[in-house]
Amino acid sequence: MKLADRIEAGTPAHRDRAIDGLRALALLAVPLGHWLLGGFELGSDGALRNASPLSAFGFFAPLSWVLQMLGIFFLVGGYASVHSYHRRRGSTAQWLRQRVARLGRPVLGVTAVWAVLIPVLYALGVPGTTLRTGSTLVIQPLWFVGVYTVVTALTPWCVRAARRLGVWAAAPLLGSVALVDLLRYGPAADAMPSWLSVLNILPGWLFAYQLGVSWGESRLAHGGPEAVPARARLWRRYGFALLIGGTALFALLLAVFDYPASMVGVPGEARTNSHPPSLLVLALAAAQSGAAILLRDRLAKLLARPVLWAPVVVINLSAMTILCWHQTAMLAAAVPASFAGAVPGLTTAPDTLGWVAARVAWLPLFAGLLVLIGHRTRAFESPWATGTGAARARRALAGVLAAAFAFFALGLA
Image (cartoon, rainbow, N blue to C red):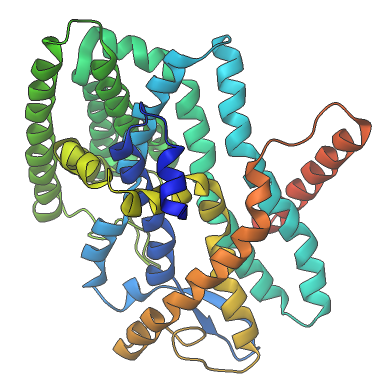
């Protein structure tokens, strides 16, 4: 039996293929975005430093609108969490511990491995500056895991809000971010404290998650079969409203209120949209969520084909591996190349169209290295052995190594 057929045969009937497909799409956008919108520059000391093509090419900003799909990721995360939450067999605390463990194991694995790699690479002649650059890139995507963990812990409260307010449960989160943005960018911005933007972190990323919870809760709501088409029609209207409203707000913020066009940080720019999220991020998330809701049924029919469904399953099973190790895959190509000097697309400054073409040509190598690395590190996503003294000692050692890497990557050591 072919792999696609085996995966098809093993897929439960209740599996929501459209949601898995959307998650796979959002997952693949993460490495593709980092590989295309991030680069290196080789210094006279032979060390690699971070550089971004966004500094030289303004036309890359719209590309960041497409590749910044965290809104989709949080939307489907909320949707899936509702279904998981209602199917739990133990207490809410047990359910949350299981989900946090699934997120935490791969993070602990990648940081512990890098803690061992750093002194080894340094002994092999890799400059300390290159190691700092690499450590920053490795730890960069991991902020998402911390935020997602906090948001997941709020699932019971999100469910209650969805039952009372439906899709409108996300509106206060949008209003909160809008208020903070008004204070930090408005007429009184000079009088505002610098830490004010931190207030946007939780509501900013919770917005799309709450939309997903409300969407999932609606589909699970009690009622006869005749109520299902009515709810579907209602959510199609919500989808149109989110798509049109989010797009209009996005355009307004760019054209009238001078928000930065890029969805990721640009070196040298005073303002950034994503760290922490600005109102522009929520506008994009609303538009993306609306599009996802409208396309759900078509995507489900498309993924009914085993040949298309199989890669979606593989990607979802390797979700944390992709998130945690894709920067390592790029570094596995760039660090050895740095010893050869200026290699277009790898160690040259990302400020020419030639660099863009060369970087696109390197993408298959990055993907291949990620597959090879993922084959070895996929075990970090599996439950670890518990109960024995040796198992506890390994977990403790991994924790110490992870902490050491965090200190190094954050410049504290």
